[in-house]
Image (cartoon, rainbow, N blue to C red):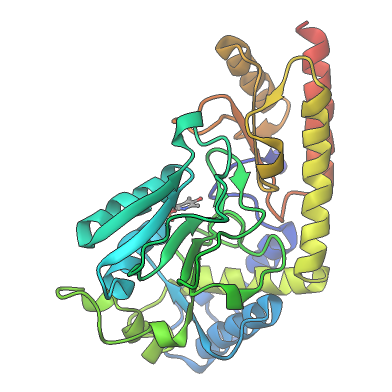
Length: 360
Ligand SMILES: *Cc1c(COP(=O)(O)O)cnc(C)c1O
């Protein structure tokens, strides 16, 4: 069997060229006589791999010199604790709750200090992004927290919240490298890479240097201090070495494709095909408010749970896998990350048209 169109939300589709290159280098990485998986993370060869990955990411995102790039473990979920442990100097932070991941981050922060839920879209099953132009930002908030692209529900911030001068912390797990970003608008940008960048096991944290201090909450484990990882260039302990190597290959692939503005154009074009179809379909309907639609995760329903199940089953048989919505959201979700080719989206829409025709 060949490769199919994989619409998984994460771990998710990766560029075929990257997988092929990794396969070619599996047994013998560039004459080393071993795989990157078998290599010391202290070796010169590996040092080049991680340094080049960081340099390429800096180049792609235009990361200024006063920001550190950290390659960590523990998934995005460990950051839910690491952020308050390291940044809650006043023990106060403001959270905007736009989905399950933001909610989990908020709940975790409540363990460490006073986390304020200053806005939420839970009243309408997280189907929109609240107006964040004039929120009741706390006077003494250490930061304002958002989840920028809501993987489960399919919404995305089109403008960043007005934090009234407070530091913005953003979980970009499912929109990482999907479009250009102005890093200077953030204190911390972080994400698990298994959505849009690489294999599960790596989380990338981009953090402004002045936020990396010894002044962390008492009891913070050494491994959860940004400073230890920053001081050791992500090599304090054994990093997720193979995963970082694959991320590095994806950075090079994106650069070769033309960078983040080209990614954005491609992603807009792909999403438009799917959303335009949903907007005219009598059977399928998009779940979220139009102006808040994600380019990465497209959620939709037929309005009939049995028909949804039939669609998911028949789509899988036709070679379109992982279209089932998140277990907490139901319906369908097509995740169309950077590595999903345009043909995958047009083929899916053709299949949806056919399904609609056959099931009138
Ligand atoms: C998947 C996801 C997470 C959780 O990631 P883990 O690496 O499994 O901890 C957090 N935030 C967002 C936006 C996600 O999409």
